[in-house]
Amino acid sequence: MKIAIIGPAYPYRGGIALHTNLLYENFSKGHNVDIINYKRLYPKLIFPGKTQYEQSKKFSHIPSLRMLDFLDPRSWTKTAQYIISKNYDLVIIQFWQPFFSLLLSTITRMIKYRDNNIKIISLCHNVAPHEGSPLDRVLTKFFFNAADGFLIQSRSVTSDLLKIVPRAPYEYNPHPLYNVFGKALESSRARRKLDIKTDEPLVLYFGYIRNYKGLEYLIQAYPQIHSKIGGKLLIIGEFYHNKQNYLDLIQESGVAEDIVVQDQYVPDDQVNLYFSAADILVLPYISATQSGITQIALAYNLPCVVTNVGGLPEVVHDRKTGFVVEPKDSKAISKAVIEYFTSCDKHKIAKNISRERQKYSWQRMKNTLVKLYRKIN
Image 1 (cartoon, rainbow, N blue to C red):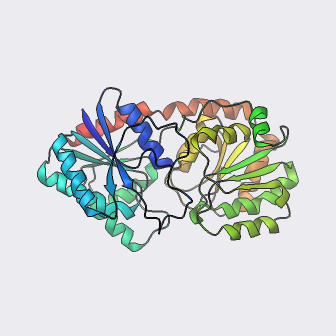
Image 2: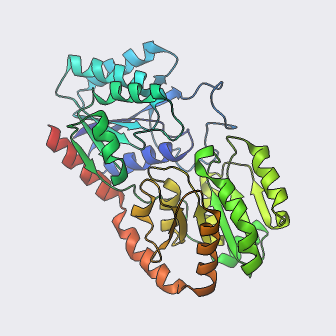
Image 3: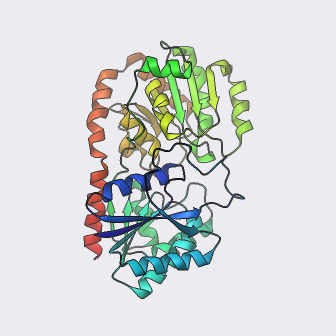
């Protein structure tokens, strides 16, 4: 099969680019695959981070055609014409943000107008955005009505999809593991590299810091956690919103000396240090569909505390592979973390995680996309 994947890929950073890289690597075993990448992704005016580019060269071998520019409609036309000229069987479009809906729907409609034999699948990371507006639904519907099929990565978004496209052909496949950041290190070795004591409890928050991720509830929970088990909280991720508000909460917590903040995006070749060093990961999200961060934790056999939102409880099973608590509940977070350190069978949880992660393969994702293609063809 001849396949095009439209989405950010190397040299862009972040979970969607990583997803595209790994999807390419797996599909290219047995299929003819091209990545159609962005030459300009987010305009600098609206991008809150420090850089859109990956520092690591880990995926520099991934080839892509950098054609798309959100601000240049001529590139949309050029991309559609290129896809038509290459006679692809399938185009997989990474969809995560209504911001790109006009661009993607224009390309899709141009392709379908010229060659209806080319099938278009939207691979949905989000259906309804975490921090959205009423216009987002309109834009998303405009694109979704042009696509032939949809792959969703959490069952929780099924109703969101069917509200937009009531008879949408779709398949479900859980978000695969992000298991490409290097082998797990001995905890003591990872902690020495991070200048952390080898014998103290270590709680990790990892990922971009945005309003919907609920970091304030973990900060508010930490004094109680610290009073029972001591140790440190690592907050590792680039601040996209309200950094000073979080720093003020930390200073008011009474345990600021044991909360370590690193306002940075972690390059691919350093991710394993944090996940090898930590005892438990906490993701106190207020809303979610799924999370690539849980899929990194699974790869490192690291238990998680997650909130009961979106597809997170589909991945983390309460008191079997981690803990599920209600959102916006600092007391529930502190209770779960304390329970893990003081009364859980950690070896049993590790074994459960090891068994669970077998479900999250990229081969399964590949097979599901092929199944969906055959359904819509």
